[in-house]
Length: 319
Ligand code: BDR
Ligand code: CA
Image 1: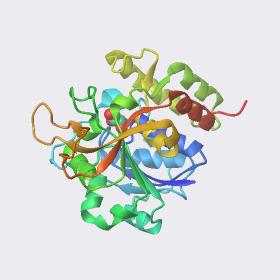
Image 2: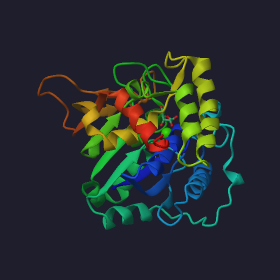
Image 3: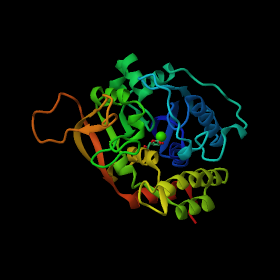
Image 4: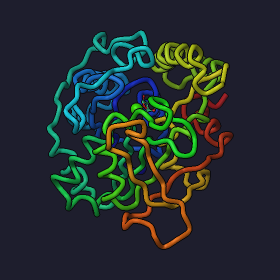
């Protein structure tokens, strides 16, 4: 199985991605780095503990404390209307019987990467504050990470926080800019692509009814229904039957390169205050005048049928 170090902000789509990871035997999550974003860092720790206990993975997954603030120092805003008070829609993580509450400090993330040199794929589906801090404090690990997948940014179409900025980037543009301009081999799965990674109510019903693990099915339904309401009310993706599971697409992309399409370009993030704050800019000009930044892969499309097929096979029983 492929080893994943998961940097998340533990809201609804992060959680669905993690539950998927636990149901697909080709995925091995080695660590969860708990960042702020959809919820506070503190709540993210509780969600990570809850999910680990729920999926009976206490012996195999390390939980690592990530960033609780962006580099601007501003106090984060948590979008309760999308992810719920605790990031689990109407549910709370406190009902679980959690035996192992150990939270590692950040050096554990570095240890994992060093121990499994060139074997760990990072999937970052929250703000980039924790990951960029690692590149500043431990630059030697940059070359030891096998691949990095980032759910974030909006290219060529509107953002979801401002007309041009997506939440994971807008939440800490300095961190995102650092990762994109310093780190090599980043695969960016942006909002304009993840907006099409839609799960419908009917699909969730099938997953709930035929879920291989009876303790997981009902949780997916409750958290999805809450999240779906938000997308219905705002009509953010012009789909009246479903809601986009952004973070699941970024994780899935790491396992299905054959179903992803990318372009290559250097990427920078606008950090100056103003209308463009948090915008991701890809320099797709065909010229040699580009700034001297690494080329990143930016997803422009994916095979939706294959995506849905993988989700059904991971979650549901054969017949
Ligand atoms: C991203 O922001 C968060 O709300 C979601 O979990 C996802 O990672 C979408 O813009
Ligand atoms: Ca997220």
